[in-house]
Amino acid sequence: MIITTTPSVEGQLIAEYHGIVVGEAILGANVFRDVFAAITDIVGGRSGAYEQELGKARDVALRELEERAAEKGANAVVGVDLDYEVINNMLMVSASGTAVTVR
Image 1: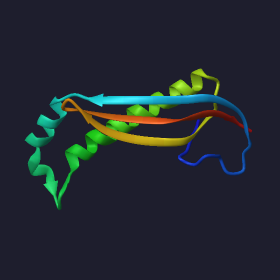
Image 2: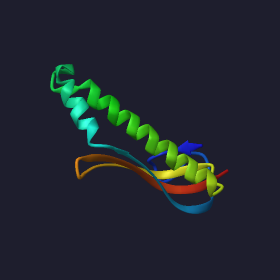
Image 3: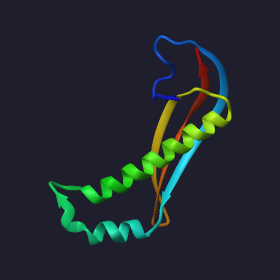
């Protein structure tokens, strides 16, 4: 599955559009407690523990996006956008894009 932030796949023709697909991952409130408990991990203004949790959430969101695109019969997702939101002490990572078939 090709996943790209661009509106097309270079060298390939979009033969069919399958619609918008979204993948989401939500990290519970405990992630903030756990990250701040590991505050000693901060070096140069960056927290490796926090970045690691964000990376896991991003991977889950993209994997979910890919699964939903495959369910629609797509072999690529174009125009992918990643968003990060904090909602009621939870961190949500969402990935959205357009599922397509390229040839």
